[in-house]
Length: 390
Image 1: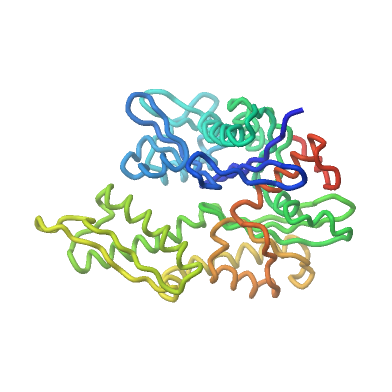
Image 2: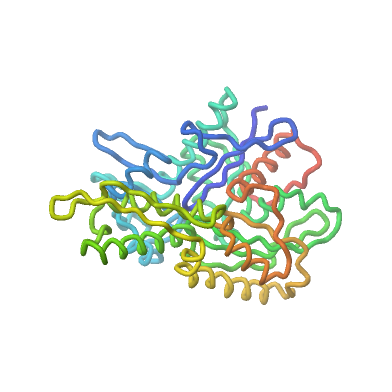
């Protein structure tokens, strides 16, 4: 019996993990990164790039770089009009009122694009394990409908995988923290701020069963929005000085985006960061550089409205769960954006307790999926088996 891998198929980034002995291992990809951007790019000559190589050319090849495809999974064309207007690639109406991505005259279903990301994750695992991998546990947001879950399963099948289980992301996070081993009934809040989306879920664990009591969120709030406030600040500063908007130039914008993300990450551990972009743009034939120092305080001021936006969904989820914040036993952080100190402070302020740390927020969902895979393959015996049927 082969290994069953766990894949967190995210809107912005994906992650793959597998049980080695009794420990879940997060597997680095061919670029050496433990998470892989959920991005597929089509380039000249019919070649495709997936992950970091696709992300690096996203802004200079906008019509053929597909990101955030998860937003279209299992949806009808009519329901995703807003999403279509937000992306630079072309989404058309396919048969049965389904959204299709149009590339070089060929229509791709969201499942086919997701399958390309899953194939990269599959290959990452195979290179690491040295054997073929055919079985997988894939995670989805708690609010995903049957059709969205079915589409996720289809994507796995297109990628050549047998999907053994589709499990909820917050439940996977709780499994990764071993909360099923507590031996008592507990209430868990899973605060998930990813690259593109924000989800808050309240789970009740009792008698070895996870029940999602309530879920809420904002499908357009995530790390990308925090990058954007830095991009806008840099562009405005440059514009004030040189009267040129860097956002209008694709090459400059790609560099701004990369620099903004790097600065944001650095500000989670440091109190200030230097952004240094030489030769960003010639002004009247003279090459100009962009050199700026951004303090954490300034960044938090720029992002204040985004930080405040997490509160309303938390309140709504608590109300729907019928619990008060004092009844929450554990608060779990999921998603790289929860590394921001201001977000952690907000979570602590709202729930009145420190969130659990210990599992890497980028990896916690994939780790939970892998532990579920370990149970299904019989490698792990002391973990709860979830009966969420795909």
